Image (cartoon, rainbow, N blue to C red):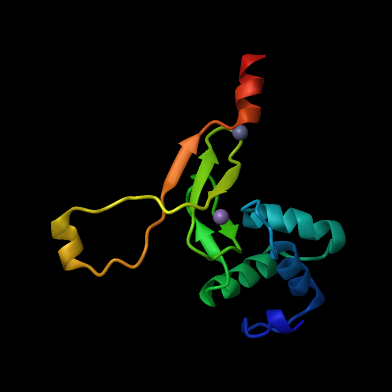
Length: 134
Ligand code: ZN
Ligand code: MN
């Protein structure tokens, strides 16, 4: 499993399962969700194992931690530049891959070298909108 080398952890079957679960995952899962998924296959897995693996990936820049969900931290294996939109009801998070024209005031820009931005949008998804009506 070459692509998983260099995360600074011994690759146990449990950790490998976490890495595989995250690979290409677009759901922005929380640690709790990942733990619940992993327990289906590894009932003895501990929450600490999940959490430590996520921390290690995060520290190596292989995973982004999102704070858009006020209830729990969410994780994104897509570390490329993009923005997020969350449904305020079901907490579904979707990606926004677009360059959005935002600027900061001149006086701020002069005192900082800007290296990026991350915009958080809030809304109600189609599914929740439909359920609301019924
Ligand atoms: Zn929703
Ligand atoms: Mn994302």
